[in-house]
Image (tube, rainbow, N blue to C red; front, top):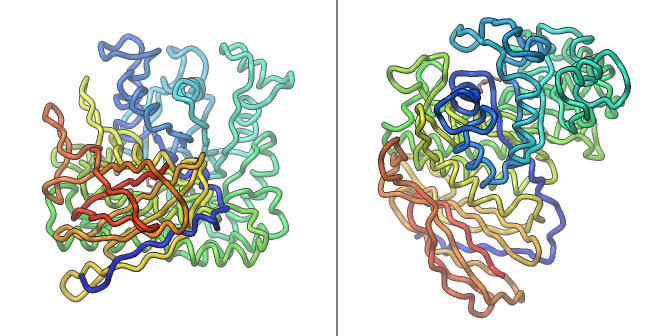
Length: 492
Ligand code: AHR
């Protein structure tokens, strides 16, 4: 080690709540996310509750999934919600133009989605169609879902079997309007946002379409167009995916060397730079920090698995993905004052999925176990910290070897740590000041190899295990972080 790794926790300075929505997910009509992954229909031989896979529902409940974004993604700006209500046999079939050109039979629509949210106890986040829809269509959808009034839309909802409105707080006004959502300029989108948001009456928390990664001009123009209209806008989104290489050749999900491991983690760490730069622009127009940054698409994006439909974005998930998740979630926790929600893409069978399915079988990926480990941070208070650590060097480049965040809830301190170095363990001294804790526990996610993953029909290789930790002495807890690991320490 080049330096003595140390972490100082300022427990007495804790004040910012880590919104549970930072642990959010995303389900799009894409590949086998909805159909086969979540919904199999009530006549399926796969065990289900009203058509929802029982195994998936239970796995989602276990990690306390706080919010689920739907119906897209790019699909959202092609989606006409009235196609997905009423008797299933009467619903029209459409072509899913963005994702594989497959037939979408609309058997999973508004009621199916919102009933799922109630079943797993999660909030819903719905993306309205700005790209190919109309203001009337969007406004009627909000009314259908949220209104208590007597109106043609609420009558229709009742006819379809739902008497009471649903409680849906989060609404997205278009998705990637700079790209698949209409290829709009930021100035034009800014005006459209104002129009759609004005008529989305009943939508409590409205999220404007924000930038693609490093496109700071988009943030500047949209914020400028909407300045003094912040009663219409509660959040601005950001999309940032981690690709080892580029859009033409992204890299394999499972077959990679240390160079790709290093590059993937290095690019993941740029999330901090994105949050700093986008929020700086936002604060120029919104000095009182009223508009939250909503990172509603993040995660790894690799080449699809061989033999699968390229439009389905199906990829495996290794220990490297666990590190990507751990690092991103630590960054979101540490920026909880700015980041009000985040949604990993996507929940089942698509991109950095927490769950994979094949017929009746289900696999919990390394990323799932990170969400299970980190759930202790949901709605906890973030603990500010000072971290001094070694660098992890690869060839001519280097990045910090450790990523960390901490929170306190009901007197329990939770510290999550990642050791990015795949070859060396790191000793760490955690300074907890004068605080007295007698009960210390630990958990760990690691594996023998960087590319270890959990496969169908095989003993899982990357799981959540207990970790032995020594009790603190003189306010210091000394521990060793194994190479390529994600760790949770709890002090009670
Ligand atoms: O998550 C897959 C796609 O990535 C989404 O549909 C789109 O919003 C983004 O480009």
